[in-house]
Length: 78
Image (cartoon, rainbow, N blue to C red):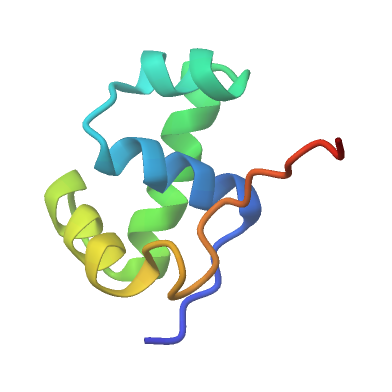
């Protein structure tokens, strides 16, 4: 599968796949719940899915860490 998600969309789908609600995702990545909703709509469109379950299945199968660049967590030097 060749799907290009933005860095933020990757962060959102990662948290979505963990079962977090939009408000929880928003608080965790410092954006509004409405912005989370817009990212989710974009993710669904790009993945060709209609719901969280379908998106999570694709994420777990094709987009998960080490396969197609999960949101990277940069470590501070030291």
